Length: 384
Ligand SMILES: *Cc1c(COP(=O)(O)O)cnc(C)c1O
Image (cartoon, rainbow, N blue to C red; front, side, top):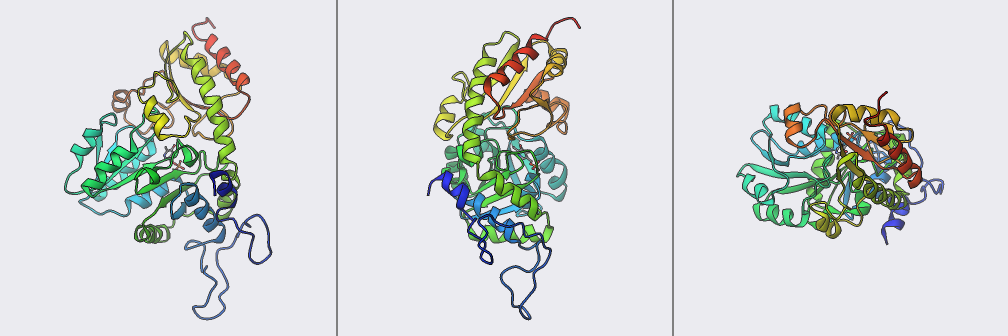
């Protein structure tokens, strides 16, 4: 079955007890047992819940992986992956990544002896060089948040396979509609389902997809043992969202290309980061590795913080706020929002300047969105 069909049917068989076409919200903490140790596969909703199971199967199917697990957030999913390791282990991490993921590596797991080595994302050879005898995993995002850099997953998977370490890919930005890391050789895929998968900015959630059954059982153990599971309502909403993932992603991509091209020629914009632009340094790789370029665009304005302030004040449709991947357009100021937890010097060194903005292009009408940006750009440099 093709992607669009799986999104609507995978894990979503009619309810066995009533025939309900839509997976019900099993809002229950526990399940009555027929006898001592005799049950229908569910005992307690931290360990397993039918609505959650449907979501887990659906996400696994979209990633073309065998096993899925759902979590209370993307970071809870990432933490579950990190629970696979122990003190003394090393993880090689691409240096351009979501601020909260950086914080989890650097401020939480490091103190338990799981050390991250951050490497220059632009240099495949640097990954190879950074892998040490105690390295257990390489962790990357592609495209990255917020610089929209790409890495060749297939080439990196060759390196990790040869070195005998795992490759984990945070696939939040591309979504499985545009990129399937497991098919390119990755071992673990992680999602913040908060973003494109659920797609409506109405929940926080995460997921992991793997092919290896033993690893799945280990991750499932940590899911239950640490307990960061999503509630049935959030799982239901995530399923509701992912059923339309393909149509939404096509629109995000369509609008993204249109607005990136507009911004790229605008005199008040210093730089546009979008893999769909032919001048993006990895445009060719994007075309090879991804089925589309998506709706994430980052820009640098001319005129520093003042320009940013004037610009965001004039926006009417774009909402200023954290997050991405919803049907509505959002504008994020990473320096103070998503990457507020990254030290300033580190942030600047990575190119996230004070005039840097990240745009999550929604699926509103593209002309309305362009007009909104054009008006706000006009306000830059005007006397109040
Ligand atoms: C938002 C995000 C996360 C964290 O997910 P939460 O659901 O907020 O915990 C991880 N990675 C990326 C790329 C993200 O955008």
